Length: 427
Length: 191
Image (cartoon, rainbow over all chains, first blue to last red; front, side, top):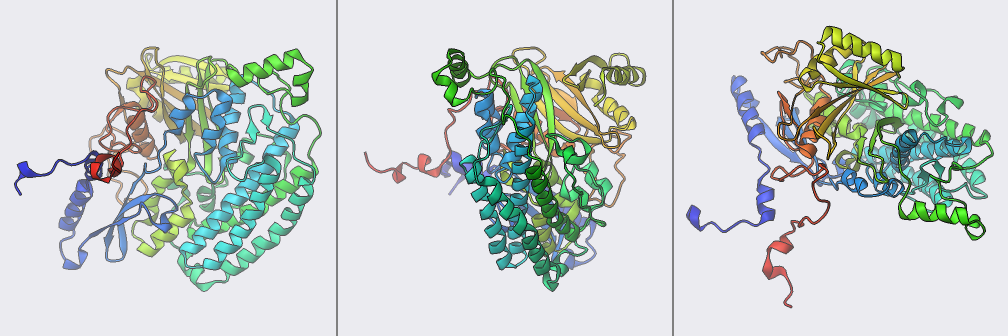
């Protein structure tokens, strides 16, 4: 068939063929010619993903291998890009919370917290103490939940299937707690601008205490199962370390940075939402290898449990959302008796509140690092720009420096310890 | 956070070291300091701020100031981990010449064992390797071209995508979905 007779390609096929391997192939050629002394230096380009259980989502990696050794990694992302930042610009401030929550689908409370914190800073709204404590309780539960999913799926990548069931058993308990207090298991829309959506229901405290009593011993069991497992230790100890200076240059934060010995944690460094009221430690590693990354996250589960217990002990009385009627909905019972409440309710539900013009960047510590929300307001009731500095997106850049020169099996372990959430990366 | 006086001191220092035209404005809003700079001096300003202790670049993101001119903005969030101090550097470029110097080093640091990246790029410092993906995102979403970026391609949108979707005049929705089902009439059931 001559070139003129080629069938016209469909849009889909053309898009599919637009991804070219030319830069990688050129690099391979140059590397091969650079190390042409032996035939055994032959390089192989392997495509991992986008649909691969070890990539924890739809991450695609173009891996250049020399035998079993990784020489280069090119991450290709964007497969679950849904334009959430664009969608949020089309919604009024309080209606943008549900879409923002769906970015990093394992830490929805954190997404909502970063966004609401930014809007509250723009509005200059005071958040009541009880709301701050309720936020902390849910944020830390969410952190444990996120770490449990990470631990279960990472152990699964290393071949330990039973860990998956154990971790998801505890995760299920947390999701039940979320359902009890917020009505939803995921994407709860619990954190609102000015506070939280509802006070915790009767019986929640007891149920939560039962969980926090059980969680440390469960985490002990996980530690015992994995810390004494020869296979896990061989896969994690000493593999793919990266020192703190390089991590900082690459913008890496969170457990990955702490595993390398830098105790940077925004909850301690720049406390928000009354984190300075609680007594907790920041686990750090020493060499920054995969084992340290694992150990730091496992230790964080204990610390989060401690924070939840303290927040429950010291939970102050008072309103759970700001009493500023221009921002928060009036209580339901007032609608039948107060004309003013009805007007406020109508204005908030139809138009939403207006936010004074300005720009703010509001960072918090998510399970994966610094989650910063940038909001620009032009004075209307819709945000002019919402941007999430998602830690997974920035941390992903560290994959190549970590895994270059390691075996491909260690790349899989490193990817698991990196804990990337593709919903957050692609947004 | 630098207070209003501290922000003015930073601006004064930048004017003294980088150049009088480097700083255009300072904004102190809700206890956060922002320095608006001349786009041409971004590399020098960030290098000077790094010397002053702001060694961590948290975030690079774009903003569209439509309908104001110049329309496109790029924000650099800098952090001093020692003093827990943040400052925002902001610049604006017009849509007809959306070009800024890249702060990404030509050779991504961290992985390569060789550190011989002084190949005439003029950057004395190592740059900010973290800006790599983030500048690509700003390019992808707003069309700001980062001169000297080692690998300036689209990152989230498909490579053959036309337009820059985060611009304010880019319509929301209304985009055909590329499924083979839509392209192949034989797959559709008869009406």
